[in-house]
Length: 216
Length: 216
DNA sequence: ACGCTAACGGACGCCCCCGTCCGTTTGGCT
DNA sequence: AGCCAAACGGACGGGGGCGTCCGTTAGCGT
Image 1 (cartoon, chains in turn brown, purple, green, orange):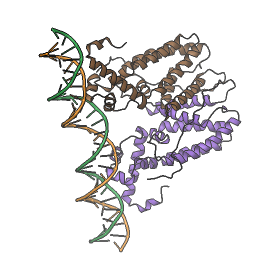
Image 2: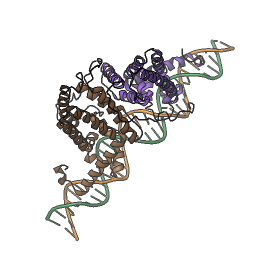
Image 3: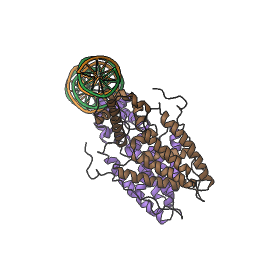
Image 4: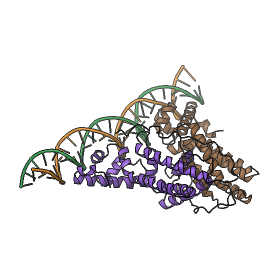
């Protein structure tokens, strides 16, 4: 399931690597990405040096920690795209991704590349793929007459950013708030006979750093 | 226009106070509230001690810096409430407040009391008033059949939080994005004959620190 | 013109985080 | 059992923000 490079690690190193990843996942989930590296190390009960040995940069740690979340995200999109009813698939994408983001603050930040510009390649290439898939799904939903014609992919990005802004003290409240927000978003995106015109769509110049492979 | 306590300050102190406020406003607007106090001092070309002498805590500085923004916010609400068409007034509130927040990152954070729990009294008491006013406006808009019946005031808070999450690199893009978001929100809030049910409303336990007067 | 005091700001000590070095431990192969 | 390299983690120096102290400057009232 994990890398096949793993067998080259000594057993204790392997254990520590997992402890670090577990700690990072837990902390990132609860407190977002700007937990100090030391804090992760403390929580994993390893020394700082060990942490840095396994993950030279915070980016590397984040990327590794959210590898499976990213897969989950892809799965959501894939599954939704396979839905014969494009509008239901589209709704599902919004609901599921909002839920995912509501449950994991760190993943949201990583997903939205809160991290200083550089190397979001792992996220970006996955997003790239997902965005294309969702674009196709959206087109089908429009053709089915369920998604409003003036919808743009950037509107989805807009709503994901917006969802990120929702923050509540308790996880339960957070989930509920995000769920209700997703409900509103879906209804706002739904085609409706007498819609008035919206302000013009925006274009986020996202992932401008694409093209170059990851550089450590 | 400013305090009448001002005359008790020496002239140079008064000048410095204004320089500090100007610097703070500019920096907060552009970069949000977590600019270092030193940075404000540097930008105002005063020493750190002078800054702290005028504003003992960051809260005090923020509060003072956004006093007029807060007034502007009140005015928006008051004006909108005076509109004979409650639905138009309601729409205006959303549009104007989203715009205000899009233009000033720091004010948004202050308004949403990003600041660690404590003394948001100035904002809170104004919000308290505004929320009541908007509640009345919303009721009228519902009675007019334009605002969806299942709308809750917390939904407005939800959307303001969401709007806060929208972040773009250029101010122009930011404004456009926020404007389009407001457009979606308004349509999501609009009454519509065949709406499906939303997930349950949420209740943010906001301003739990209310009741006590501001303590320095 | 003079002096008193309000106001100034450079400099200090504190704390926290960062990334690295190096002496020590320990897994695993023979 | 014994060795060696892989892995560990305590400790260090650097940097930056914080809030305060105190010697100096300059308004302003007489």
